[in-house]
Length: 285
Image (cartoon, rainbow, N blue to C red; front, side, top):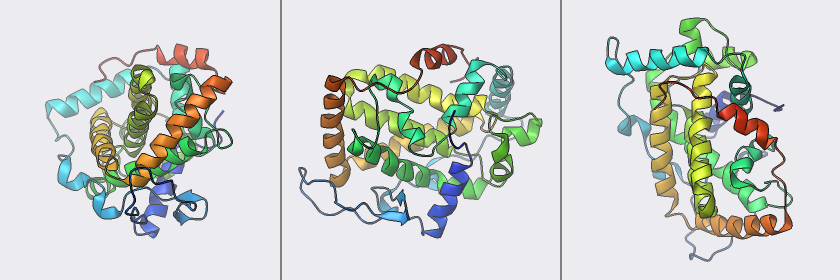
């Protein structure tokens, strides 16, 4: 079971606000420059992202307003929400609980089954660093629109439980649109596909169902998920220009290849995960 649940994201967003939502500017380094010896932090133990604030795509400028009352898009949101509620009590709902956890070290294992190899701070430190730092970049990319629209989450409207009941009070005060969790998960899928291109199909499929877990959890609408993916794609594209990110990608590529040769196991019940994720969410785009 995960150590923490969705409360990690509202707390994370609060930390970003207190820190002014900036990370240290990336050093002007050559392509082959090593990762910095000391990673900048927004607070003790919480690494900053790779990108300075000005380089992160602006969700308020890029995503449209949430679906309007009476629109076909809102009707689709509600249809998918009803399908998601039908998965309560199933293994898919339990998987959504696991996917809600953004705390490390647990979160480092989110994509290990898709990779077919384990990720941990001892054997794959550059990969863990990639996941931790890109989490911040992806989360910040959704912040402006979240704050502007303050969209109400599905569980507030339908009064049904979520997969993380202890977090509902915090989530009520944290805007639903676009989804920060989805932006993080899709960014991770893209980054890891860059690191391990031979596993791209499995990684992208896992990134997709990681996002759908937020619908199954009853904490996001489908349109929140779609715009979270959009912001993730923009963030991933911008990261390609950052030399420290590229250096960490190169280091992660080497260490995951080594871990595969060493037979480092994923550390998750991959058969149970696959069975849970085989349960489709009807109507999800």
